[in-house]
Length: 176
Image 1 (cartoon, rainbow, N blue to C red):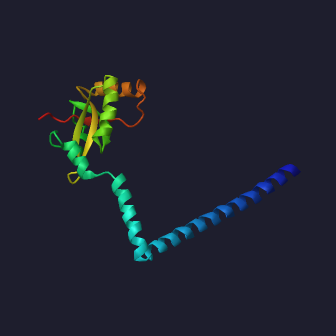
Image 2 (image 1 turned 90 degrees about the horizontal axis):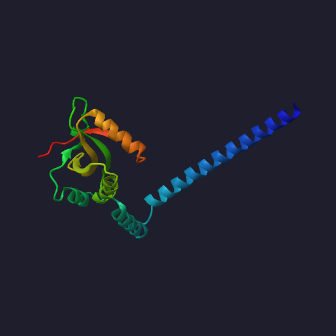
Image 3 (image 1 turned 180 degrees about the vertical axis):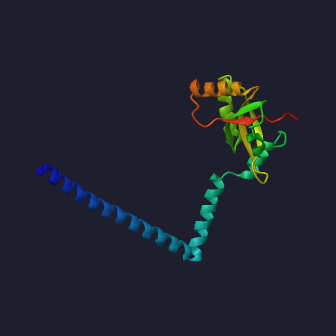
């Protein structure tokens, strides 16, 4: 009984000390962030301009270049299909597909497409338009004639090949 009280007291004191340490750390972190923000806002031009230029160089190197993606996806491909039209599958019975992924780069699609082709899964890359003429590459398995075929293919992808991400059913776009 005495040991339990002693242990409880030690734990309570430790918890209070740990709480204060965590709170102190958060306050110091918040103050440091505010100080950096103010230093960035009030930085002299001779310091701010080179830092801004460096930040833009890094951004331009790593950010997706939408113009290049649009050209890459739409080059030698049919016009992009409106993405929202593929998601309306409530009334649709045939043909259907399975959305494997939505990508900004054709290189990403080709990598996964080659893997799925090796696994003998019928796939197709579809250029889709999300909003304001921004084009993406949709990798879809199909077409399938019935919902049962879609369910079987989904189960096959999940169980046999280990695909654990969401595999959404989509309406297969009409060939033009």
